[in-house]
Length: 246
Image (cartoon, rainbow, N blue to C red):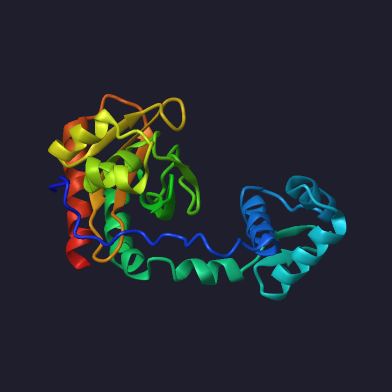
């Protein structure tokens, strides 16, 4: 897949600087982020502490989110992410998810690696959808919603490569355009070792999504003596197949 400069995509929307942001909305979103990063349930006191507000404020926020099904109260009185979040998540890049899922499933089964799609979120790559191989004992889990900065990991390199240096500087002034992204632009795939998790490697290739920022299709695995170039070409072919469907 050719990942050089031009993307055929529109600019990411920019926030206007007129009206100030809503503090209440910001806090509600932060509560969802806190709960999403927690494996167990959290009490109102714990949520208030993590948010840095009084318990009464945290309670009102959580109750509002609960009314919308975004937060769920368990039998012990703790709060977790609710099923409403899954409904919202299905609407994110719906076409990309639909096009990618069969290809991810086939790739994960063939390589016996977790395969996933990562998308642009300002300074982060966020996992949109992931597929683990069947009976994939010992494989690396990549949870949807997990994020990491663009300066770590193959998906970020692949997305940078698809954007090109000039476009990257427009979107993220002051943020480094990696040398690895220049290499990926030439080869069509990106590679990273030990950047997100020690001992873990990733290979990714960009997907050009019409009207949107580039995404990346990637696999993640425990570092080994695999044929990296062959793996990269296979991931790039799968990314190209997803792009062709879009």
